[in-house]
Image 1 (cartoon, one colour):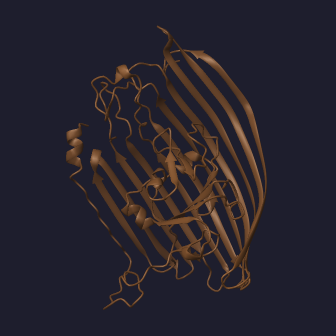
Image 2 (cartoon, rainbow, N blue to C red):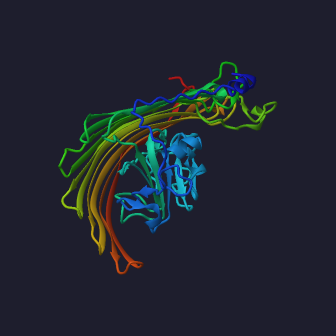
Image 3 (cartoon, helix red, strand yellow):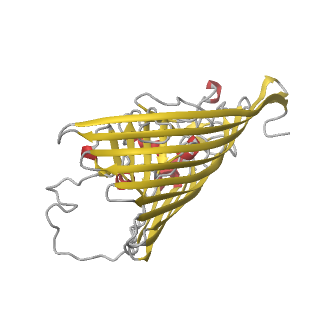
Length: 450
């Protein structure tokens, strides 16, 4: 696609909103209602694993609503750094497999998918191990909470540098509603987000479904004949949520299933200077622009049981999996000098049991956590004719890594006075990791050939 066509496509934009919910008419809004300019709307967060006003949370936390993310054009977790202070996001693969950094603590610019981040990434309180799955599209969210600094006394795993918790919208158990939003913009980019929910039994059973689709050309143009343009967009994701809250029962069950795939072309590479001659900044000359193919899926169950008005027991069980096939032309030229394929398959299981106790004198969070994950990696490094003219070959790497994590954690807030609170926290962690079936060898052959 030419840049002139890209410019013309930027002139078109479409937004459609539809709602099936009933609308109640009112003659005016009472003082203090949302939208009243004389008041500030209270933001409720669960940064300390219980509902609190953000003004009462004694830790560094940023909460961004889903509506704000949409207004700011944040459609992927890799874009969060633009709206959250002290958060930096980088990646060797564009928006795929982001590396989060809070206050300088991160996994650095790590390429391999088996390395876990010291910044814990959670979706509805479920810890997501794979950084490939962390490169998710953001759609139909209630809010995102970013906690800075160690959070090990509150969360199950890997929060040395902080925690990022994505909280999706759940069925409201009150009628039916939905929306559809579509957009068309620069570089033939077409987007659709839609969600809808219905109540199967009043105040007891509700279901909500959401979908996110985006496709578009990249901002960069590849001048190589027949070559793909880098940095394109091609994603499809869906989510289904079920909530069961029996009437008169202390039980509240939330089940969320999701799945998605992403297949954009790789980010542009500015390689050999000889391949940059005569090119503009938004142009490349690359014979093998690869695709960053990823897919993720999973299901979780959050079961809460209110033993009394002061004590609630919570169980969070999840299974997640996915794979990546990242084809990376790393030389930025029409020559076969370095082409890398990063392939991994991964799966994880986790279980967290937690007790929340609240009284006038004490607020206590205590829990146990178990998680296990497996990653099988097959990486190929093609060095083409870099050895010598006509002598092609490369390097192959295979390994399997399995990890188990056990943790006991707790935090208590003792209200000494109305204005003085003593906080005590404790954590014990046991991690085991096995590196198995490792092999590596050199091979001969053309790039993409036998």
